[in-house]
Amino acid sequence: MITRNKISNVKTERVDITIIADKFSPNTCSDGSGGFWEPFLLPEDSLAQSNKWCKDTWDYLMSLVKSPTAAALGVHTVSGYNFTGVNIPKRWSVYTTMMINVKKYLPWLMRQFRIKNGKVINRKINSLEEVMADYDLVVNCTGIGAYDLGDSSVYPAQRSSSNTGGTSQRGNWSTDVTVSDRKRILDGCSRLIPSLQEAEVLEEWTGLRPSRPTIRLEKEDVCFNGRTVTIIHNYGHAGSGITLFWGCAKVATDFAMESYRLNQQSKL
Ligand SMILES: Cc1cc2nc3c(=O)[nH]c(=O)nc-3n(C[C@H](O)[C@H](O)[C@H](O)COP(=O)(O)OP(=O)(O)OC[C@H]3O[C@@H](n4cnc5c(N)ncnc54)[C@H](O)[C@@H]3O)c2cc1C
Image (tube, rainbow, N blue to C red):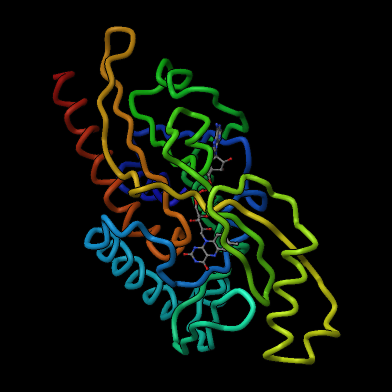
């Protein structure tokens, strides 16, 4: 979504942009994210690159915190403890970071896109070739869905989440809320804050963090029906999609603009 909004900001008068997705807010993985700026489960191999994308996103979020739209988008700084461990906390940290309310931010992004006359299609894609016939440039931001589009290196680092805690289970594709996960999260939190034992559960959710040995952020030129179609891949952000989305979208937008310029030149 961010990639498409950034592209539409740059060349809105000459480029027609369509978002195609089988799920929209509030039903995507991004909607269930905690919304914290917190690098988590990032591939070790590309840490130098991801540090840069995280930093760019931090700067962007900080600019939102200081903007008049901060309250409307639910962006703010937050301080707290972070405990990890299965039965007893094995590691803990206390820090201040930034948080964005994705349930406010994602609909806001969609409104911005529609204001710029962006087109939206609700449809499941079964292969990238399906869309290559109709577009010069395809931006593939399919998250965990990239697996079904042929990238078998994508796997889920699942999943459960509540305001009290969550789990991370590599390779588990199930999106069911299990009794054992619910119990583990509640028991763990109640040990630290006993009053939570009596708390009413308002919402439970599971999502599949789209993981991969490395984040896929690259441009690919494909020959399709006698013409070149550019595909920009931007997925595999694992447990850090909110932490580095802006930095990744900047790179993807640069790829798109380079492709656009080359396309224009070839038509002269
Ligand atoms: C429990 C949990 C908590 C998290 N908390 C945080 C956090 O605090 N901070 C953080 O930085 N990250 C967090 N994350 C990670 C973050 O949510 C993800 O990295 C991010 O949402 C991935 O975004 P995405 O746009 O790539 O994927 P998605 O949000 O899944 O979007 C993919 C889009 O592509 C569409 N699509 C996919 N395949 C197809 C297809 N074949 N045809 C048509 N459309 C398709 C989908 O419908 C969807 O619209 C959390 C994740 C989970 C599960």
